[in-house]
Image (tube, rainbow, N blue to C red; front, side):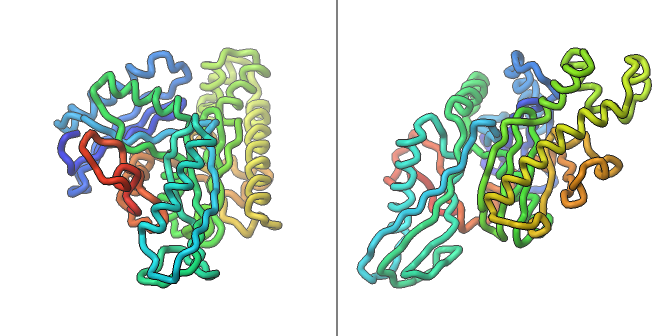
Length: 371
């Protein structure tokens, strides 16, 4: 989109595509589009092109570039701590930039098949004192940084870049969808202390935990909503499309169950047994990574496309559901999460700048320092 006041965000999930166009100067001028739910990705390009056409028509603007929000069962997080001795002079941003660049080079060396989506500085230790943010005008003899990287498989990034390039659209920023959404919801809900978000996707579940404004860990479980569909398909001997329909509408369409002579109690058992397993694995990860003995020490929020099969009337069927809040997501909220991440004043995250053909200085090619 050639007007710099407009930004476009595409959230490309494994079972649904959502997109939003935003006028940064006019919050009322927003446009959204989404695909239908799908399991067959063979015509994904067509689905994306259909959304592009719809957004261009509604906004009366050509889309030239987008910000891409994606997740993957193979995405990972890496924590690195680096330090540097100084001479007692005033700490400069260039000192921090060189440490970040050194950490980045280690990631690129040892995780060559990954694209760095986010670089987050969780802690500055200056002469033995911890700081959540870089203090102004401080003298320093010794500095160390705790840096948190969120990385996505480079083949997935290139796959989507290739799809958009066929429509003459450049991808500016690569955003981890789970991270953007969780941090936006955390801010909107004013959560403090320990807070964990369990994102039940199509073929993975991601767990992202925070302590106040600090991201503590990101973990991925190779199990998601599609495993529930496969359970229904295998046990009831129906095809995957019918199993998906049963999963999403078992409580709405009693005629469907009657025609198939299927007990709603059996559907309950299949679905909630798998969800309990996913939640138990997620909670085990949260307790282990945060070193928590009691679950009530952490606020837990359940989100994602796969979580839609739960609502208030089914919470009591999950053994520890009282400790988990379900968050109903919308296309608007998902796309706005990408926008909010780009616009929020984040003193911890380094903004990675996409490569441009114009000549730039050394550090400009790498990143702006902070948002």
